[in-house]
Amino acid sequence: MPQLRIEGYVIVSADGMLADSRNVMPDALKFPGDALFFSSALDRADLIVHGRNSYEDQPNSPKRRRIIVTGKVAGLAPDTEKPLSTLWNPAGASFEAACAAAGIGDGMVAVIGGPAVFEMFMDRYDTFFLSLAPHVSLPDGAPCFPGVGPSRSPQQVLTEHGYKVADRLMLDPVSDVSVIAWKRAA
Image 1 (cartoon, rainbow, N blue to C red):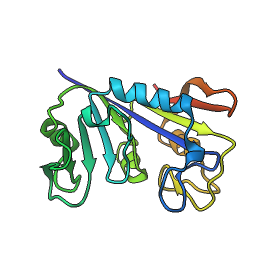
Image 2: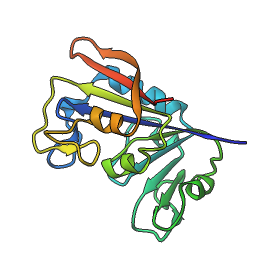
Image 3: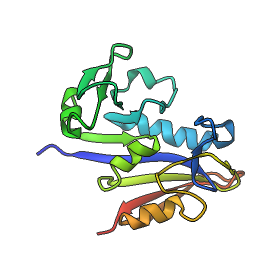
Image 4: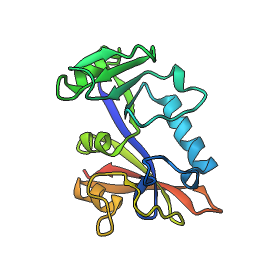
């Protein structure tokens, strides 16, 4: 039986933010090693899922099949601006129906945000790749997951949902940026 493998990808500041106070990913969170890791993962993905404000903006972006989460459609609709994209309202259609509309029945799905989209899949990830820029702080920024803030880290949220650290890879030794693969505990 075909199966989807769901992986999440985000880079966050030391305070767990994925964007600044204007909901924009600042240059301070952009590192060549992380960008290469992210781009390589998306090149391997069969499908990318994100909200309307998230987009990877890379040379291969227009070639990638994607589902865009939005409340602007009743259930499912083709995206008239992006030929390989399907618009999906979770209130009107299941994720499986959205995948079918996008032409994907199995393979790897990369979920790339934002916070509400990450939360929707929190109990379905096979692996969540959390990149951390420990020397970047984004006061009043946008948290990567709902509930992340001064007293709750992204790592705590993942742990609360049953994930454990499986692997760590240094992406940028100069800036101490690494990615940790979080997998569901067996």
